[in-house]
Amino acid sequence: MKKVVLFFVLLSIFSTPLLAQETLHFKRTKGPYGLQITDIKFDSKNNIYVTGSLVNQAPLALFKSENNGNSWVNITFKIPVSIKSLNVRFDSEEDYLYVISINYDTICISRDGGSSWNIIPTNLKAEYGGRFLTSPEGILFIQNSSNNITSLYKSDDNGKNWKKLSGIIDNKYITGFAFGKNGKMLIMSPNNNPIYNDFIYTSNYGETWKLIPRNIYETGTFNKLVVLDSYIIYAMKEGVYRSSDEGSTWESYYEGLYRESRNYLLRNSKDELFLNQTNSILKSIDSGKSWFYIYDNNDLSVGNFNFFTLNQINRLFLVNTSGMIFYSVEPLSVDNPENDNQQFLSPNPANDYIDICLNKGACSLVPICEIRIFNVLGECVMAKQTTSNVQRVDISQLQPGMYFVRVGERTEKFIKW
Image (cartoon, rainbow, N blue to C red; front, side, top):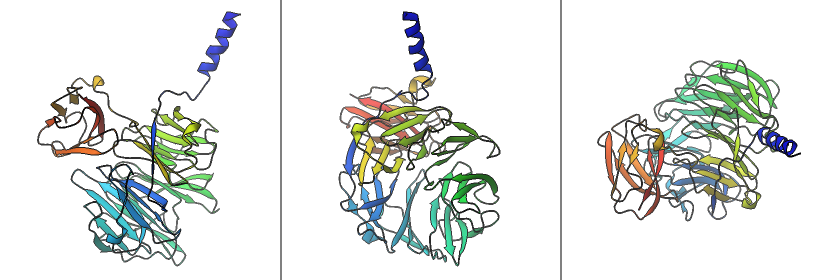
């Protein structure tokens, strides 16, 4: 009898596809009073920017928080145009905030966190719809819809000059997109039937295109696509789908994984994947082949998410339909120095200083990059430009506790005692 019971216990364990292997804890804050949040972005210092409507109509307002949403500053009045969309990009030297005007004929760029703005005319005009996209490398895209024709334009000089992209993309409206590395971009667009979608793929930011027929019935797909170095991945109600040959063949995983239509798929700096269900968050470390729960708790009362995104130290932010902002206390990924032959950060714990070894893949611009230290609230408490491959940082003035070091795409925690 004991053997039979043991058999069924083991069977139930090994037949369960989704296991709780990590636990997230969330803190809650409130967005700007009266604002219906339409977008949320972060700069390299993890300041938060949200856009939204105070009167449920355009133009949008832009608010900034430097303390994880505990207080907000309205910086809309500093922007010389009516806002339609916001994007944020950063490199090793500075942040770029982009806003585009309500009719897409002007781009404004700020390099000082929204205090001042440069105006750049686009000479384009969108009569309806339109998209404003920014790649990780700073290439700008505008989808211009006018005279019943939809066109995609590209600028690689911060909006000064624009090139109309041709080929399969002509007169295709974008319902979903994802940027990869080195020029990869995946677009979802309706086919001849307006409620069904195909993919359009490029590996050179639009110089050439490949049509990937899929005939997907899905709406609200803007945050359900991911492009990795080796895979194209998308998640719909029916499950998670993955292709390793630019869409020629597909594998499916966990059919029926999604229970709701309002879902998001995203990746962090280590190409780990995350997706959400109502009150649940799942993670994959094998490019979408298997998933496990990292949060599953109805007591959070998050409800449906409008946004599901990461800041620059891999802390997860959720915005629900009531405008409440939830953020994870723990980053979703930190590097483990025990796996390195030479430690990236030492000593740990530390009291007076830490040494950071920059030849551990942290920064592609070694030795010219910036070291940032964040507290557990996500506030940047120290920033330092590097001067050598092994950089010593004085932490003697920090209060005792846990901190996170961010260099390039690498995040690691340490203890100050």
